[in-house]
Length: 514
Image (cartoon, rainbow, N blue to C red):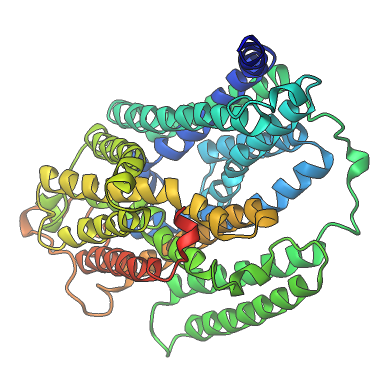
């Protein structure tokens, strides 16, 4: 009994002694990540006005950042294993800081778009932090003694540390959303954009001063011939061409008689061919950037497909929610006409609902079964977005819809990586978890671009759009909002993809829910 107590004490010292300061600094890093994820959402309409673009165009910001994120995570995670997680954490934070500063001074939309995309380097922070904590914990001289207890080994300590990091991220997201909403109502939007740059700067200082390098890591470990450079090249070409085709289509519209339409089609076909080449390269590489073979595994493909469909709503619908709330019904006949702070309260309520959904999932799983709990979660997302079709005229209606969506989304965010890890072979659990996140990100990126097209082109195509009231026809925001039929498209697509995800969950093997 005394020996067990000593083991628990040694295990606790690993986290709350030697690693306590590291986890504390990394918690601030994740708080910063949360701020970046929550801060800009209430500002999107103000950013559109500041840059002189329509509300529909801010969807391209989300799409470009998500697509870059899908490339950054596997590349930098693998690089961190070779040269050191702290080094890559510093590099990625420096890029994020430079991009955050560029957002403040960007004179045009395309410059802002590029900077916004590169700010997405922060998505690799959490994977690098978890890997760093695990390696440092396992490398401790007393880790071998600590592993004899089920709650004191490196894996258990890493889970405890990861819970602290995720908690800090959620707090940062809620704090960021509320702070931005309050500031934008009283300050110029360019001044409001300075805040994230300051926070990221402090984050970089925290990493440099408070985080030690992974034991044994060195730049000398990098072996270019072993790194999948060919895979990185082809997947980059494919995603740039596919995203670029949608961006060109944004300017050309759905009109075959315009040259941009055919250029967009050519880029899309070329991107598809590059994607085929990427698949072939990955199949032949001994250590591929993305293990394509896992997508043909009958136990895993339903999980990946579910994650991609879920990404459409959890990532792709964020910008439309913000811009719809800020649209003035006095001018357009729809929208909520909220202030920046009111919008942040809606977003904050949605984030709190996600936290609650993640927490309620284990309880629901015990009451029913893990599969039924996840089916119920996907149906919450489908019903929540479906409720937008008749109920969208009042703040209370939108908040109620988003609470339903948030409960389901939180449960799915918490459970899909675990389902992928359980369904995968034991030696590929980490890869399967990472691919689940990447597929979800790609789904959100493509959806963001498609939603941007829907909001921008439906009115031009003759589908009923905003109705400008005569008495306010000279208002400055007239003509800048997305079309109402475009918002209907967003809600319908999000609801339909959630229903499709529910169907796919029926094909996920039973072992994924054990």
